[in-house]
Length: 430
Ligand code: ADP
Ligand code: ASP
Ligand code: MG
Image (cartoon, rainbow, N blue to C red; front, side, top):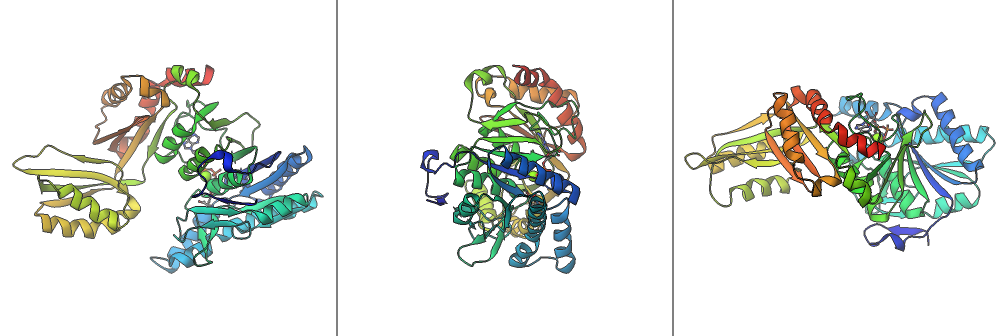
C-alpha cells in the first residue's frame, strides 16, 4: 500500500509504517544560500549514514517566495490564481534540485521531486489548496533504491485539473507532516532558525523560554493565533495521524521542542504554553444597526457566502434600539467585505461602516487553563496595569484572545508574558 487518503482514513492505526524513516524539513532561512544548502546536504547524508531512511522537504531559498509574489503583483494587480501557483511553486524546485546535486557530490544517491511527482494530491483551490491524498509510490521506489528523497514543499497537483497548486504561506510544514503521516515515518523534524517553540516569539520577547514539550492542541492554538513557527494546518494533520513532531534549530545542536499528545501530569503544573500576537487582521464595525432578530445572521451569512473568514465578533448593548456589531477579519479580505457591508448597511438602515486596520490580537494559550480559574482575569489585569485598552475578547477552552491597538502590541506581549513567567518557567524546569 502506498496511498493514503486523508479524508477517508479516520485513525492513526490505518497507516502503513516505514520503520527507520525520518522526514526532515528545512525552512527558507536554513537554505538561504548555497553554502547553507551544502550544509543541509551534509546533514541529510549524516542521517542516511547513521542508518535512517531519509525524506527531506526544503522550502524556497531565503526570501525567494516573497520575491516571486512581488513579481506577480508587479505584472498584475490580481494575478490569475493558476499562474500564481505555477510561479510561486518554482522556488522550492530550485532549492531541492540544488541540494540533490550537493548530495551527489558527497557520494550519495539523491533525487528531487516536485510536489506532483511526489504524489501530493490536493483539492483545486489555488493559493490555499488542501492535501487530500499522498500517492507515495515514487518515494517508496526511490527509498528502496537507497536514495535520499527530496520533495519540493508547499505544492501539489489538483486531481480535477492536473494543475499545480500551492498550500498557502508556510506550506512546506504541511508537506512534511503529510508525508510523515502517509509514509508512517518514525518522526517529522522541522529544522528552522530558532531552537524550538518558545513561550513567545523570541524575536519580540528576548526573555521567552524554549518549551521542551507542547501538546498538539496548544500548538494548534498558538499557530492559529499568530505563532508563525509552524503552519496551523500541519498541526491538524499531525494530531489526526499521531505524527511525532519536533521543532529544532538548523544551526545549533539541541533537543528542540517535541509536539505530541497531552501529558496530564505535566499540565497540572504548567498551565501556560505561550503568548502569541497577530497583526494580520483588521477590525470592522457596523454602527447603528437595528437591534432585532436576524440582523447578525444576515450580515455574517453574506460574508460567509463571499468566502470571508471572520475571527472575533462582539455586539455592544443597544441604545435606542440600535447596536454596533464589530468583528475582525484578515486584512487581505477587507476589499471583498467592504462593498458587501456598505450595501447591507444601506439595506438595514445602519448609520455607517467603520474600518480599523491598526489593531492586533494578543492571545494566551495553555491546556492547563481548563482547570485553573483566574487566568483570563490575570491577563486582563496585566493589560490594564499597562494602560492598554481591550476592544474585543474571545476565548476557547485553552485560549484567551484580546484585540488591542496595534501600537501597543509589543508592550502587551511583554507584560502578559511577564505576568505568566513563573508558569512558563515551571513548564521548562518541571
Ligand atoms: P522557516 O522559514 O524555517 O519555516 P519561519 O519564519 O516560518 O521559519 O518560522 C520561524 C520563526 O517563527 C522564528 O524566526 C520566530 O521569529 C517565529 N516565531 C513566532 N512565534 C514563535 C514562537 N512562539 N516560538 C518560536 N518561534 C516563533
Ligand atoms: N516558500 C513558502 C513560503 O515562503 C513555503 C514555506 O516556506 O513553507 O511561504
Ligand atoms: Mg515556516
